Figure 1: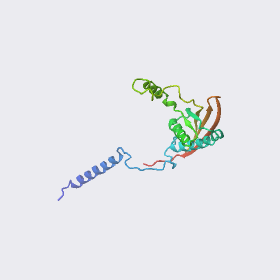
Figure 2: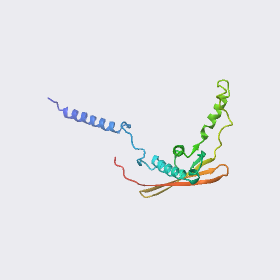
Figure 3: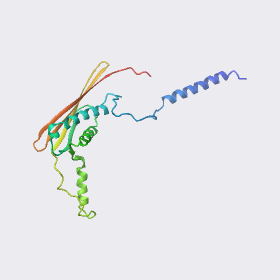
Figure 4: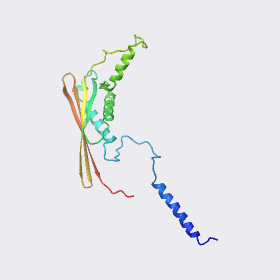
Length: 205
């Protein structure tokens, strides 16, 4: 038989179990289940510059540059180098990922060759090493035979944010220029605009 205090004990025990369940639900959480997704599918999880913006912008600019008449009619793919693409927005944008994506697509088109500006220091270091005693002189590579770059790609990333009440509109514009290094003439220029609209919603607990 249960004594008079048994209902109280049962109630307290039940409350302890309920509290433990609530606390475990409020504890730290981790992403433990996932799967592959189509990288071309548009997913807007927040109002920041994201991968979909990068794809839309790079695809449009690459198509425009590949169809530029001087490039289409060139006997040999011009040698190009990526220069500065300046971020004029108020948020962090991975400019290198954007320019890498554009460069990769242009190389795949077969109409461009690229010089690697970022590898210059490493190349100079390798020249010094190959000039030493450890490398066969008949196979050693040295300075003086690099091909001069003909064109430089530069650009700017700009944005404008408008927020009224629960509505927010974000506008991005990426402009790229192709400059002839011999003449300093911008021979091609184009831009891509992206506009996104958001609305605030109450988030329930």
